[in-house]
Length: 81
Image (cartoon, rainbow, N blue to C red):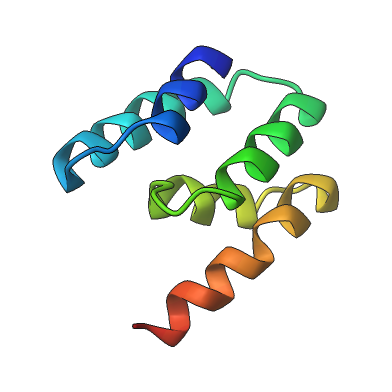
Protein backbone atom coordinates (compact mmCIF):
# COMPACT_ATOMS: atom_id res chain seq x y z
CA UNK A 1 0.00 0.00 0.00
CA UNK A 2 2.74 2.41 0.97
CA UNK A 3 4.67 1.73 -2.25
CA UNK A 4 1.62 2.41 -4.44
CA UNK A 5 0.90 5.62 -2.52
CA UNK A 6 4.54 6.72 -2.86
CA UNK A 7 4.35 6.21 -6.62
CA UNK A 8 1.16 8.23 -6.89
CA UNK A 9 2.46 11.10 -4.78
CA UNK A 10 5.84 11.33 -6.48
CA UNK A 11 4.81 11.23 -10.13
CA UNK A 12 2.79 12.96 -12.79
CA UNK A 13 0.07 10.79 -14.21
CA UNK A 14 -2.81 10.95 -16.65
CA UNK A 15 -6.38 10.80 -15.44
CA UNK A 16 -6.56 7.14 -16.50
CA UNK A 17 -3.42 6.28 -14.54
CA UNK A 18 -4.76 8.06 -11.45
CA UNK A 19 -8.01 6.13 -11.85
CA UNK A 20 -6.01 2.88 -11.99
CA UNK A 21 -4.15 3.81 -8.80
CA UNK A 22 -7.55 4.46 -7.24
CA UNK A 23 -8.75 1.01 -8.22
CA UNK A 24 -5.67 -0.70 -6.78
CA UNK A 25 -5.63 1.32 -3.57
CA UNK A 26 -9.40 0.92 -3.22
CA UNK A 27 -9.12 -2.84 -3.28
CA UNK A 28 -6.31 -2.86 -0.75
CA UNK A 29 -7.73 -0.32 1.71
CA UNK A 30 -10.52 -2.67 2.78
CA UNK A 31 -7.98 -5.04 4.27
CA UNK A 32 -5.84 -2.64 6.29
CA UNK A 33 -6.22 -1.56 9.90
CA UNK A 34 -7.52 1.82 11.01
CA UNK A 35 -4.11 3.36 11.74
CA UNK A 36 -2.88 2.49 8.24
CA UNK A 37 -6.07 3.88 6.64
CA UNK A 38 -5.60 7.09 8.63
CA UNK A 39 -2.02 7.38 7.39
CA UNK A 40 -3.17 6.71 3.83
CA UNK A 41 -5.86 9.38 4.11
CA UNK A 42 -3.39 11.91 5.47
CA UNK A 43 -0.83 11.24 2.73
CA UNK A 44 -3.40 11.36 -0.06
CA UNK A 45 -5.01 14.52 1.30
CA UNK A 46 -1.68 16.33 0.84
CA UNK A 47 -1.33 15.51 -2.85
CA UNK A 48 -3.07 17.23 -5.71
CA UNK A 49 -3.61 14.08 -7.72
CA UNK A 50 -5.30 11.75 -5.24
CA UNK A 51 -8.05 9.60 -6.75
CA UNK A 52 -11.28 11.26 -5.63
CA UNK A 53 -12.99 7.86 -5.33
CA UNK A 54 -10.49 6.83 -2.63
CA UNK A 55 -10.71 10.16 -0.84
CA UNK A 56 -14.49 9.73 -0.86
CA UNK A 57 -14.26 6.21 0.63
CA UNK A 58 -11.83 7.34 3.30
CA UNK A 59 -13.92 10.43 4.12
CA UNK A 60 -16.88 8.18 4.91
CA UNK A 61 -14.83 5.66 6.89
CA UNK A 62 -16.40 4.47 10.14
CA UNK A 63 -13.37 5.78 12.03
CA UNK A 64 -13.26 9.52 12.64
CA UNK A 65 -9.45 9.24 12.72
CA UNK A 66 -9.57 8.27 9.05
CA UNK A 67 -12.47 10.40 7.85
CA UNK A 68 -11.30 13.65 9.41
CA UNK A 69 -8.11 13.66 7.37
CA UNK A 70 -10.10 13.88 4.11
CA UNK A 71 -12.48 16.72 4.98
CA UNK A 72 -10.34 19.51 3.55
CA UNK A 73 -9.78 17.86 0.18
CA UNK A 74 -13.46 17.05 -0.26
CA UNK A 75 -14.43 20.62 0.53
CA UNK A 76 -11.90 21.91 -2.01
CA UNK A 77 -13.14 19.55 -4.74
CA UNK A 78 -16.76 20.59 -4.19
CA UNK A 79 -15.86 24.25 -4.76
CA UNK A 80 -14.53 23.56 -8.24
CA UNK A 81 -11.84 25.48 -10.12
